[in-house]
Structure formats: C-alpha cells, structure tokens
Length: 384
Image (tube, rainbow, N blue to C red; front, top):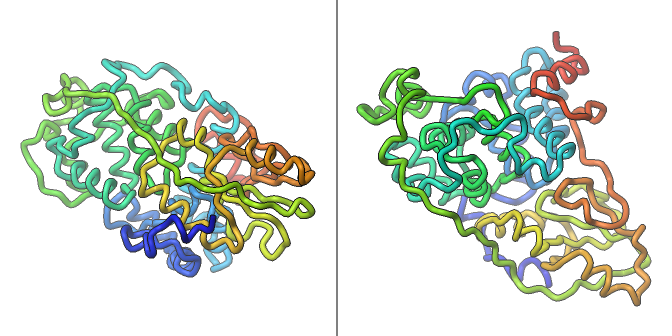
C-alpha cells in the first residue's frame, strides 16, 4: 500500500509541525543557540521546535550540532544548547543500558506516592491552574507541549497529586508528536525523584514568570515550603485509570526484491538520508505489538506516516516483522540482507543492526547522573 492512500491529503495543516523535508531543513538553519540558552525556559523563548523530527529519527542531534558548529559558534559559548541535546542522548543511553528497566523506578522508589492512577483534572485540562490547562489543551490540539510546561505538569501530578509517574507519563507520551520513551520516562522520573535526589517543585509565582500568566489566589500561590508540605489540593484528588490504544490501518504484505537489501524503518527511524540513492527495499514497519506496548494517538500516527513520505519508494506495512520474513521465505530473502538501526524498541528485528547517529558515540555505559555523563562530553568538545 502506498502511504498516500491512508493519510489525509494535507494532514500537516492540522498542527504546527509540517512534515516536508525543506521545512525541516529551514527550521535547522534558523536555530539561534545563544538566544536559546537565554530564553528556552519561557514559553515564547527561542526554542528549536525540532524535537518531533529528532524523536522520529528524521534528523539527529549530531546533524544539528554539526550544522551549528559549521556556522562558527564555539562549543563554550553555546554550552547550554549542546547540553540540552546531550540530555536527550543521555536518556537514550539509559534506555539502551537498562532496556525494559525504563518502566521501573530507576534510582529509587518514587517517594510519597498515594496512588498509581491518572489525575482526572489533568486529563480534562481542568486543574485550576490556567497556564497548565492551556498547555494541556495545546497538547491535545497540536501534539506539543513546551518542555517547561511538561515539568510543571509532571510535578503537579507526581508531587502535588502524589500519583506514581508511570501511568501519567504514558498519557503524555500518547499525545506527543515527539514522544520518546527514554526522554519521557526519565524526565517524569527526574521530576518525581525516582531518578533524582529530590523532587522538582514550582509555585504560582514561578509559572506566572515563565508563561506570562497573571493568575493569583490559586492553591499554588504560596511559598515553596508550603507547597512541599501541603495536602493534595481538592482539584487534584479525583483519579481514574487510562485506556489508551492505537488503531493501525490495514495493509497488504509488501512485495520485496530478495536480491537487494531490505531496510526496515519504524516510528523511531525515519531517516531521510539513510542509504539514500542505494537500490534497496524500504519498508516502514508499524508493528501492532509495539503500539500495544507503546500506544500513540491518531494524530501522532498520522504524523509518523506523513514524515515517511519524504523517503522515496518506501512501503508501509502494519504487521509484525516475522510476517515479512515468513511471507518471503519462498523468495529466499536472506536474514543477513535485512538492515535496521539499533534501538531498544526493535531488539527483536533480525539481520544487521546499524548504529544510530550519536553526537558522542564513544561515550557509552550507564552514568549515574547527567552531569557525570556531561563531563565526558564537555571534555570531547574542549569545554572547560
């Protein structure tokens, strides 16, 4: 089945992240890494809006860093910008090392948990804190939430409503165009002190500063010491369980030329440049088993499929990798002729697994903190 048959004529018009290759390249060229470092925590700050394309493997942190350095910026003057790219890579290394442990409390049990459900007022964008409610509405409408608002939301859910991070993190991942298990799970755990030494808190004064809201007299309009000691506010007490699922379109098994390599793409690898101009079979594989484990919304699924349309000759198959292998057995397709990119979500793929494009490929292993990891990165960059 061709990709055009199952997506809207112009789905990118429904949200603010166009999927054409030219636009993505232009967005990379517009990065101001110095202004980013100064303003990124404000909702109108000079952020890149590239995370959906990085998370989906269309572009890489390495590609962005190389582009910036080629413009003459020195690593020491754009350290904060590089650090934020490195945070993403650090979380990827965590997932790579602990595998399914990404779904458990990584460093320690999340403290002061009262339940393992989702907070209803967060689902309904009715928390009583206007900036957060607006951000949740934007998440539903556009598949995006500013990183600082993600931290506020996670802190509200985990540290004020005292919910365990797991189910709420799945809710957010479901709606994010840039949904990435490593960054999402680790960030929620960092806020909730399951992957950090202390919880992250905010109050009304802080959120007003960074979102330019003017709300007063909310349950957050108090000093930090009171926020940290307060009982669960009434608007955050109702809870419920989530029911998230992804409905994949029906597709026929793709025809494969067994005499040439077969490249397997997925929702984390939509690299436009991967083996470009080579004669290969190209398949976007969307496995039901994957989306049962990691469900995403209809909007996210459409975004993934639309991004894949930048890859010439790619065929969509919604099924399991073994179905491709079994259906082509009579054609003598060689397992060694199947190529994918290494990723924790696709360890079960047979054949050759090529490396992802890491910014710091030599820095592997399981570092206990980001800053232990960053010291190694900074040394490579010559940052003192």
